[in-house]
Amino acid sequence: MHSQRPGPDPDPRPQPPQRPLPTDCCDSGCPVCVHDLYAAEVAAYAKALADWNQRHPDPGGPPPAA
Figure (tube, rainbow, N blue to C red):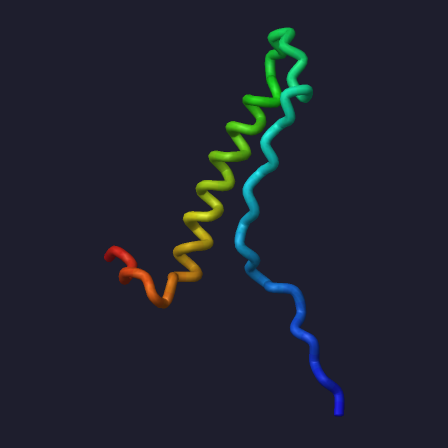
């Protein structure tokens, strides 16, 4: 008998971006600083997580708003 292993989750929960290390910023006023990039990644993560939560409602949580 063959046991089937579950494949990768087709819709995994988004993972938060990694915060830059203090040494990642050179403090020279770059036009696009690693902190700017991180802020954009956090905003994209928040949207992706909200979208994911809509697709995967918590069965014990409140009903989704209409």
